Image (cartoon, rainbow, N blue to C red; front, side, top):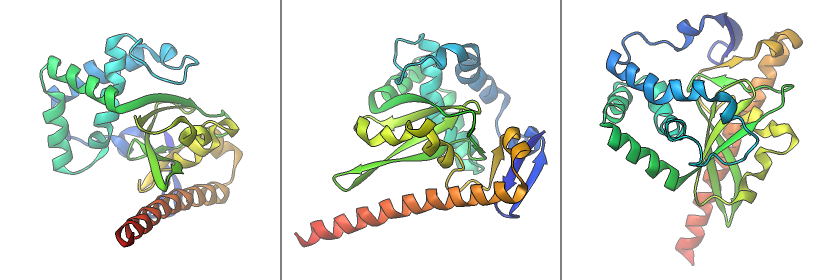
Length: 240
């Protein structure tokens, strides 16, 4: 049984993981089998190695694990989306021959930095229904940067960052026990977020609801401000 906050009803509720995440008939048996072999099984079998104290996820990892992480970054948005187009795209990607899958993983590693971040046990990650959440990096030269984070445990997040993002743009993600990442784990538009049971035991429903809604407002505001900054810079460039 999971505890989750429902944004539409503004309530903290409980339910089974199947009722929250399972979508009957969303994927064919062949798609599920390929996802299990290429993504789920390698990650589950290597969790200790995955959380080793190194910042970058490099190709020094065994290839099946590195490939699984690269595919997770690529496929997670399609896995969680409810549209038929997303399901079709997922199927087209995962059912490609193994050599094509390997090529996709290598292309992702060339364009993205793969990272792992650990947050404090005192502020565990939420799990947004989208299965991922954005991370906003510090702007440089008026340009904001974003990462894509996927929670893999209550305190571990796997993060993909475009390769042109500088280290100083992501420093805030790791300071103060990665509290920034914990706050952003509520996501920017997921209709509900799973809440760690320790949080439910420690705080009242009113406190949990306020904390989640305040965090969501902060995420949305940050994204909006980046959009406004980009628009302003385009206007200035047009005048110059």
